[in-house]
Length: 463
Ligand code: GLN
Image (cartoon, rainbow, N blue to C red; front, side, top):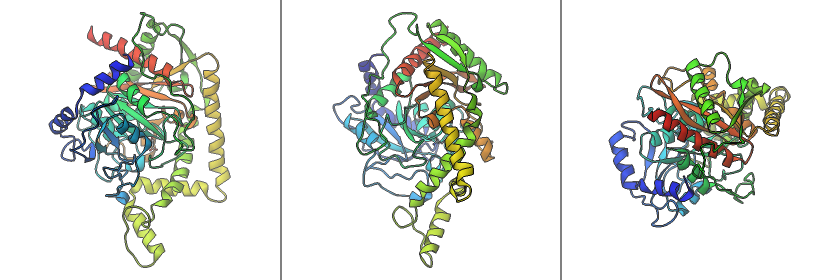
């Protein structure tokens, strides 16, 4: 799809259509619980690439028109005095910000069950989770309310819910999209991401929000190339492309039905002209442990600001330390509290070297392994997005089991590289996601391959 075609498709889904779908699928608290707040008066602008396009925003991106709660009691009713750069860019392109979406509290979770405002239901099966932490955004797209929504990623929170809901989710290169106005969870891993009904939809919105921002010191000062893939001009559009199949992402324990869908997708990539090559990323098994040292460490520092003085809710009590304690104990949910404790522990004197420093060293190793693969002539990697399809609400109660949902996604955040998920088939009626990863700033190659694969799989489904 050309740039113009992609934006035309987005503009064809109007705000009025969004509300009709919203009411029909009961996207609000009485149904899917995908939205935490809505603006029925949002219209967008009359002109611009996204003129009048309804967009939903994860509730950890600040907006002037609606509250930003991060799915937490501690920020209940909080309205930011400034707007996230990604949101501002959407508005400048004419988009209508129709609502803020439900999420795991402070983006910590993989099922959206950690929201203080209740779980989100998967629109494809209301007994199942939509994934997390951007579960509300994924559900809003999958239910047809919006074609595109913003989410955030620290370890897979856009890709995993996209996989669970049968849509497309893109996590760009670290620094490609400004984090200004994205409420910090683990700053060295956090990204703004896009969820879309199709590759072109998501790519078009990424095109609008990408770019350097002086308000984010980690934003990359590099030009933004054309991201919306051009239509295929030959039947071998991926000729010359080498797609790596990292063996650590296809363990013997992988659900054979998910493995089979990945194989089918890899065969399609070959039919489209790509060469598939087996590669190895030996430190992959260390990614989850490393992530669960670094992410809580950063979170424990970032979340220190919720002290009842500056933001949101305050529980008045005795003296100042008692006020802090009461506010934080009642304002944060169990998972957030667990992460703050864990993070404080790994950063404490005596443990810092043993845990945090070592985790940083392994993180560098993981990043180096990706860099080595991408400099050895491999352009992209293809893997499953998640080890299972969407599970049932309440089924995964052990934190460590929940953490393993992100086993194939956290690596891209640790390495800072772009990655995305797209639907590649179904297991027991639920969608399965396939993941592409690319070298830093090579979103164009990733999106081109994703669009070609999406097209090929759609033809296969029709026969
Ligand atoms: N599930 C992971 C976590 O809980 C990733 C979340 C995210 O990407 N925001 O930290």
